[in-house]
Length: 189
Image 1 (cartoon, helix red, strand yellow):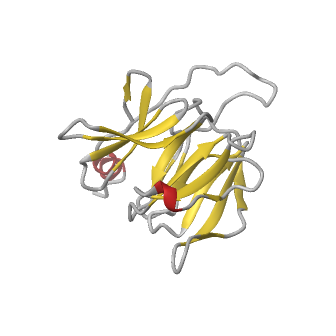
Image 2 (cartoon, one colour):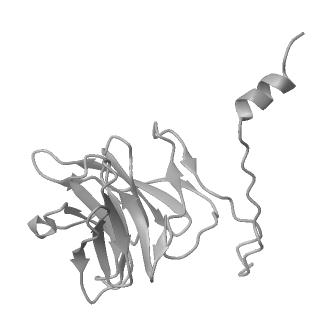
């Protein structure tokens, strides 16, 4: 994720040619080779955290057009061909499953999932709670992801208590060549 002049990039097309950006009231795409910015969603509402479906035929995002932040889906790139509200009681940070059959999002401290069907037309199932917990997040940024096979979430557990409003500095440990280290530690002689 990169930031450029108040815009935050959230997603790339599979061919690496298009970056999807978000600002305070709009979602736009940028062609990498040409540098042409194309508005996708523009309104008077706060809209952001866009996510392209794996087949790049749909775009999910959060918007406060109903007063609170909720998750919406539109066809992509022809966004005027429909709009569906996926969350039922608020939602942020949409993320597609690798096969595009589920859409995940946060509702407070709860990870939600809605089943998605796109044929013969778009249909989102009733969202269900997957798990709950306090996880570290920075407003406006993508704060979690899925493993490529869609079986695990990657999130940072937040320290402190629910009443603790301050965020203690977090450390992040990245281990390179972990498999070689594991082999070294558990090598049998």
